[in-house]
Length: 116
Image 1 (spheres, rainbow, N blue to C red):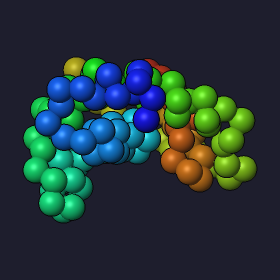
Image 2: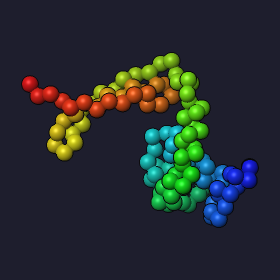
Image 3: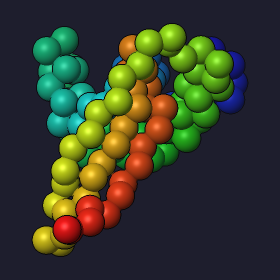
């Protein structure tokens, strides 16, 4: 681990590997903070979802940039388009998402629904 990386994790209760894994899970997969808390608990690591949120806020930007940099040009050949109707403040909208086989959201569009 470089000096820069070790300085980022200094004064944390948990080892850098656990913190890095939790933040990676949060930014790589569509998981909630409570899901990550549960996944870590299954492995015997007792950490609250608030702590994971603080780690993601403090260290997440660097992880997000690394994931984005690695994924550029590496999207899967197969993808699918989801559509659903969502209601926001009582008004209906169409939500369209293009997702590749690896779970990356390629495109998302929210359109107002026209009443005829």
